[in-house]
Image (tube, rainbow, N blue to C red; front, side):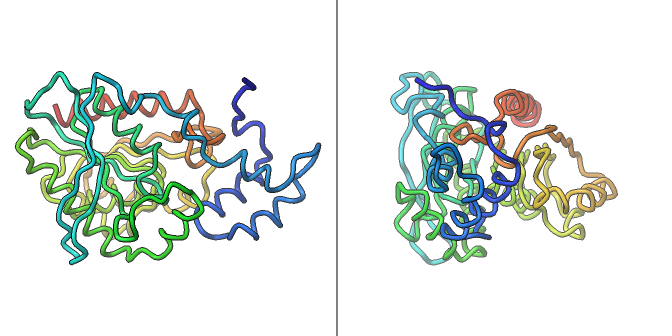
Length: 297
């Protein structure tokens, strides 16, 4: 099997183009047109897009049928009048019905794909009850195709989606097998949701945003939970707003630890794409687990 490609195998400008495509600033045609200049040695622009796109099998760390876990697809009522929101719940099997600290897992801007399910299982292996709602439930759930997921995500009512995530957190915390301690971790879009929940959700005990959009600095005084923030080294779209928000957090006296990982790309924790940085991802994950242990256990 050939070695997996990493961010170092791609031109920095191409990675920036891919980030713009991932976040809806370029459509597929626009990406392919602009990526054409990087096509060489028999690799087409379409081939470059395929190489940069997720490979869920390669990134999986915990098998779906891992006997150490109990997992299920479940749902909770949506406050937005859309019925229920589906999600993926994972607990350590050895815990039985014991009350566990709970962690809400908030996906990137593609919905509840196999990578986020894998993240949820990883948290369960560390002794937590982890739950990942799917914001795309209203359109039928994650469609199994990243381009279709991108299209569906662009049609979401974001205010309603935030209300659904808040309801999911409250549902999780109120479960009979939950200890009452609640954390949230989110990635990219989910990092922004984690920031929003830290402001809006009473009773939240910890929030860990990975490279997520931040609220306006004036909102910092409303933060209700300790924060552990992970930032990529090369991520101007996110990083430009961070200094002002960090200053506002300090002024408000919010407990906040921030780590920026030099040389990494937005999405460096996502081990299904070449943007993944194994060393940075491990360090960020270790810090996240230590933070949750100090705040939730």
